[in-house]
Image 1: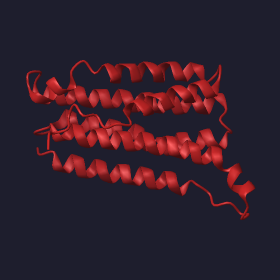
Image 2: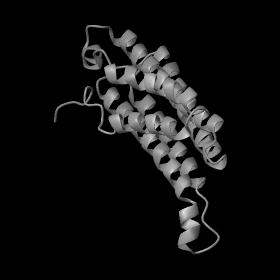
Image 3: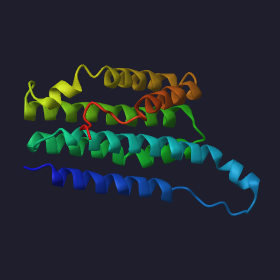
Length: 189
């Protein structure tokens, strides 16, 4: 099977996820700076989630440049990633509505952990599809940044019960390390 359909479907789902997240931003009833200031934590949570979804979309795009074809396991692994990404608007909203209480922040970290784990499974499915000796596996390398990201998310979950801001800082740190597109898969111009 060609990769075009999986890319188009993924792009559509990710666009819907971003749309759902922005629709959760409520317009203040009062036209004051204070009303906007009250929404600042909600807006910052939206920015963090938008950043994470954007990073997955960007890296998914770059990764699929190296992909020649997809099979059944790749399709299921991609759906697994999209499933966890689609829960990000819920996790973000729950975290915001709770006022950043420990359990919702831990749930947010868990959702991001599952996104990262499913992305890792997608890369494994693609390696199985293309073989270890091909360009894709060589480009992936040891994936140290991916492994460190998984570890940071694992730490962020229990840390939410100790200090939610440290937990969120770990999550933000992962996003900041991935903000530059994953060039391992980008084709030279």
